[in-house]
Image (cartoon, rainbow, N blue to C red; front, side):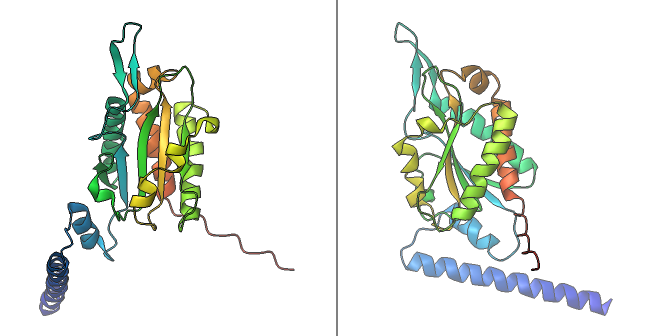
Length: 238
């Protein structure tokens, strides 16, 4: 009995000490004029405590503009990219949370993106209203985390393509993707990518009528990435 009580007291002392350190860090940051966001606090709380992996999702164009807009012959708006992105992102977040993953859903150019530290950051978009079909993905051209980003892209090419049935469409990757602002805003140690999930023109039925299928493709891609990378094969003995 006494031993159990001692163990509990030791655990309580550790928790109180950690809380005190966190509070001190917050006060120092505020005194220095650094505004701590909810994401910063979440990162501090998870620091070194073996917390769940954190996936940050940008719902493309949310809180910024409408993105691509599809109209009919009279100019009547039929579809807005921002709405498609938001619907799919919400389903991705819900599915990942059910798998025990911590998820942050962010707007386009959300101020919390500056210096953001997460296990992975993925921005979800839909392409224009032209009659093409396919997905495409881009990462930083120069990166401190090139290996994880390459692994993320590989997971998208295998998992997203398999679930959605879409082919990779790299020939339409634009400068806006390769120079995506979040590549600069996020912490350089956060693996980051932007995914155009399909074309609002050629893939409208998939994106609008079967958003759950698109979301599942994104979820499987991220779960693939979050798995521990395979250990390197040792060289054969001479």
